[in-house]
Structures are given as C-alpha cells and as structure tokens.
Amino acid sequence: MRRRLAALAVLSAIGIASNAQAAANDPIGDLVTSIFSGALPGSGVFNVKATLYHAGAKGVGGLDSLGCRVVPMRTLAVDKNIIPRRTVVFIKETVGIKMPDGQAHDGYWYASDIGGAIKGQRIDLYTGHGAASMKPMQKLNLGTLTAVKVGQFTGCPPK
Image (tube, rainbow, N blue to C red; front, side):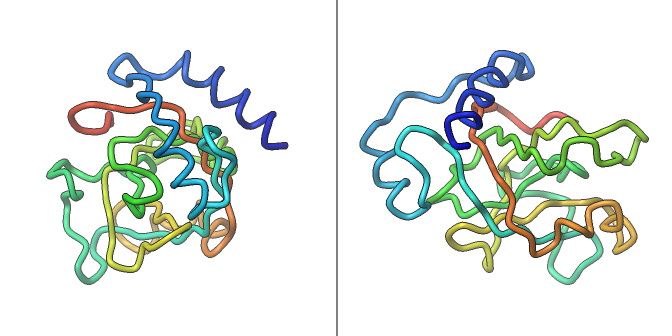
C-alpha cells in the first residue's frame, strides 16, 4: 500500500500547480522524520489524525502562520517538525468532497499553518467560516488520514 501511495505521490508531483517546486532531497532529514512519523524513509507518506477548524472559532483569525489568508478546504495546520510548512500534501480521503465553490476537491492541501495542539502525527484541516463549513468534512473529523508529501510551494497557498 505504501509503495502505491509513494507512486501516486510521484505522479501527483508532476501535475502540481506551477508555483509548487519539488522538495530537496534530504536523506538524513527523511530518516529522522520517519522515526517520529512511522513513515518509510524517503516516502513522505504519513498516517495522521485529523481535526477540523474554522474561522470564527476562538483564537482562529483570517491569517495562517505564514501571514497569508487562510483558504477554505486548502489550508492545513501541521506540526512543522513532521510536515514542514510550505509543503503540498495530497490527502486521498478528501478527493471528491464538495468545495465552497461547488467543485469536487482534488485532494491537495497546503501546509501553511501550525497550532498549539498540533503535535506529532496530527493535522488540522481548515474548512472555512463558521461551524457549518465543517459539515461536508465531518466524517473525517478525528479520523486517521493518509497524507502524502508531493511538493513545496512558494509565497502563499493558491486559492
């Protein structure tokens, strides 16, 4: 299964938006990360516990930790020691979920935020403004998802 996901990550990296760049090869960093994450070294595949967050919640503003506007169904809060900020992540379980604009989600998320409770193999998916924005993704809340590193982005995440 991990080999299939790694192959998917390689294929997905080819089709990432033009502002995404391939991650630099860091075998020592990959090995250290794999010790904490349980992923195979170099694979960039993680099983993570997901929670949801939305604007309007106590302490959640309109900007991520990079100073960029949070983007509904795209912004991902991570433990930067496991998944570095500016990483493009593919989460297969989100493919097909209805986006705010009515289109189906393609599974790509942008690690541009961090949170005090996001430690280790945890991620926080930003759904939009208000608790109602969480409804399409409620089945994923507190679930274990497969997150695959597929690249890096510069600047702010695309909308």
